[in-house]
Amino acid sequence: MNFLLILIVGAAAGFLATRFMRVQADVPTTVFIGTVGAGLAWVIVRLLTRLASSGLMFVLAVAGAMALIWLWQRFSR
Image (cartoon, rainbow, N blue to C red; front, side, top):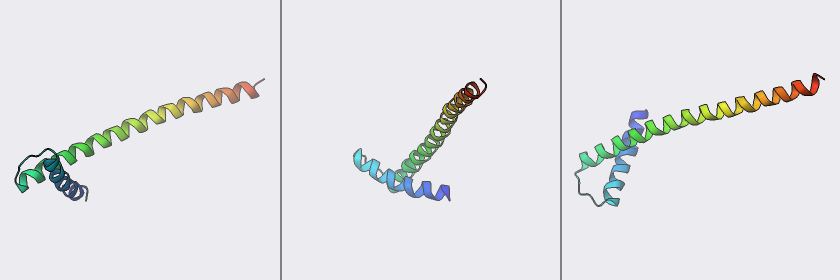
């Protein structure tokens, strides 16, 4: 399913990219360029999503630890 979606999005993206860049290319080349671009974009988005989620998990872990320290100090007296 992901490959089919990348192929469809890539074909449309390749068509638009060749028009925006004013490049004359045949249909297979346009589809290939778009598909490779869509595949690279998919990999980059997946990587950024994982990095962002790891960063958010770290920030929330620090906030949770600070909350526990605050509770411990407040109720241990």
